[in-house]
Amino acid sequence: MMKTAEFAKRMEELIPADLSESWDHDGVMVMPDGSAEVTGVLCALDATSVAIEKAVRSGCNVILTHHPLIFRPIGRLTEDDSVGKRVLECVGAGLTVLSFHTRLDSMEGGVNDCLADRLCLGERSAFLPFARIGTVPEQPFEEFAKFVSEALGTDRLQCVKARPNVRRVALVSGSGKDEIREVIAAGADTFVTGEVMHNHAIDCMEYGLNLICATHFATERVVVPRLAEMVRSMGLRAEEYVFDEVTEYGI
Image: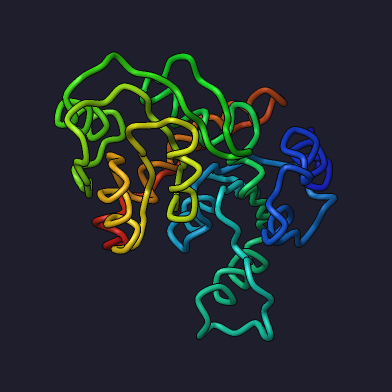
């Protein structure tokens, strides 16, 4: 069997910290007992209260997530704080929480490669550490938007049609609002991301760049099976959990 501290070390080797953005905070979030044997790993996008409950029910004592449970410094741990409440729940249940954020976005085979796989991008390359660009068969914008909706399992697209066809597609999972100029410089005619702000959508129209925002959630949940694969490759039991963002959280 593998100890939780050893599992954390193995994951740090697979997803090294030097891939993280300078502002990021991830890695070990909670570890009540590093000498405890790993009984199972729940792989999820976020360590929500529902995910914590599911980990306990399924006999998992480790939660492995993309989004950090603790992103900003915590001044106190109290039940009336969203993060503090969940940290206390994890400590009380003996749950270790490991989160791998921007380094998982950037790594080969990470979030953005999983997204590129799901959208069938060919001739793929990275033009930022965490951004991917590739090609699809040339097609009308509406046809490609429908494909994205079906491939990612969401009908909650927000689109800007700035040109009629799609051929060269750039991807940034999650929030791609700060990468629009780099997307254009890379030669993309279409940008798929999770979310941007109103002014960024206007920018895309002005620059002649098609935009498809397919929600932060849908563009990143694609990595959960990949995390589970990594866990199983170590001979450990992995459970996959991707919450329903509409019925459970309304986002």
